[in-house]
Image (cartoon, rainbow, N blue to C red; front, side, top):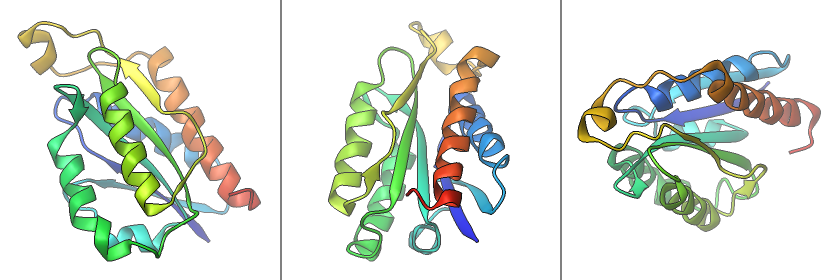
Length: 163
């Protein structure tokens, strides 16, 4: 059975909810095991075991969150030249546009020679004040639906051997 690994980091809950929605969508596909692993706990062995990936993180100060970047730092060289060609997608929870974090994930994935199977999915919370930025995030069903669809699509591609 193929495994879809969803590695996520969240400070205020938005990205966690996105990752959970993706896992729920992926769970609709038979023949694919979904693992939802916090970035602080994920490592090289998790990447090697999986057939495909979703990387979910918040954008902080226009960049990938530190804990997600630290996951990539820990895992990068131990799996280099061992996961090339595997499919991945990125999900970013951002206060504004999310493009900085999405670019960072793409650069890391390019180094691993992963294959992007979807455009980065950015959910924008429009939080602009310190209070709103630091507040627990509640995402709407409309914001979470694309996350579930992405998880289901990636799992379906793995199950069908498309990826």
